[in-house]
Structures are given as structure tokens and as C-alpha cells.
Image (cartoon, rainbow, N blue to C red; front, side, top):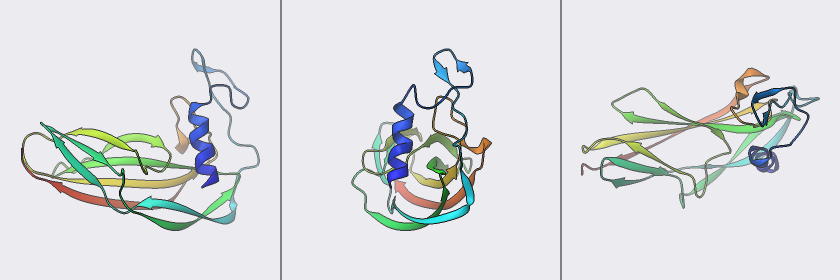
Length: 162
């Protein structure tokens, strides 16, 4: 849990670590975490949502995990590796997920709007928890270093037609 909080803090930090060169003016590229070793593992407990909340607004649906129950999940994290998540939303029967980016584990307060049209829809929220040695930063690409998926959870919900 502590590493997840540190990861979130890095998203807001503009001067963390040593910069290699600017990717975009004012946004340094942070180097991989020194001493990150995915072969040395330690148990850690995180909270993962167990339900998705859906609320219709015209042709859009608010997809959230705000006030949804969570469960504690044990994962094994590599030494000095950072914990992150990728969130995908699939509007069925579309089948192609819309990736909504990387960040911390979506719990209380996380929400995004998805266009679904006026008809009924089934929505699947996929949460992928991973470890990486690449610190969170502007235009973050956590899969470019020592990246490993630690768990994946799919939450489904249905919304009635407008």
C-alpha cells in the first residue's frame, strides 16, 4: 500500500529524481529505479474493488468504483519495484477495450465517463496491477522497463436504455 501511495505522489511531483533529458519542455524523463530487482520478492497486500458502479447521463455512462466494496489481495512485489495499474473499459458487444491510462489502483473516488449511446449496454472494467522499475511521470510508459503483471480483475455491470 505504501508503494502505491508513493507511486501516486510521483505523478504529482515535477522534480523527483535525476532527469536524463526533456521529453516535453518542463517534463524530465526519470531513469529506472536503481536497485530494482524483480527476482527478489516480498509479500504485500493491496485493496482491489469488487464491484463497478454505473450511472447513465444522456448517451454517456459514469463508470466508477466510488463507495464500492473492496477486497484485500496478496501480491508479491519485487525489491525496489514500483506498483501501478492499468484501467481498461470495454463496452460490450464492442469487444475492443478503451484504455484509460496508468496510475494507482482505482478505489474510492475514481470515475470516468464513457459514450455508450441511448441503448442498453454491458460494461466491463478491467484492472491490471503491475510492477515496474520506471517511475510515474509525464507520458509514462511503465512497460518499457522491468514490467510484470501481478494480477488482473474484471468487473462487469449493465445499464438500461435511456
